[in-house]
Length: 98
Image (cartoon, rainbow, N blue to C red; front, top):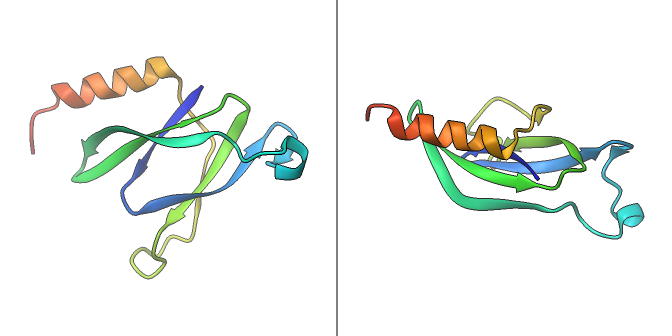
C-alpha cells in the first residue's frame, strides 16, 4: 500500500497508474483509495491520512469548493510508504502545541 496526507476541504480526482490514467473499464473497478481515521495538525491545518493501492502512481487533488482557494488542482506524485507515515505521525506527536 501507499499513503498520502490531504488537507481538510480537499478531495481526490483523477488517478494514474503505470499505463497512464486509471481505466475503470480495463481494471473493471475503481482504484482502492480510502481515508483512514488518522490525522495530523500542521500549520493550523488538519491533514488526513489516505491509503491507496500499490499500483497507483499519482493522485490529482483539488479544493472541494473552487471559490475558497485560487488553486485549481494539484497532482501528488510522491506517495509515501507505511514507514514514512509512522515517522510523520511520531514527529507530529512530538511537536509542541501551537
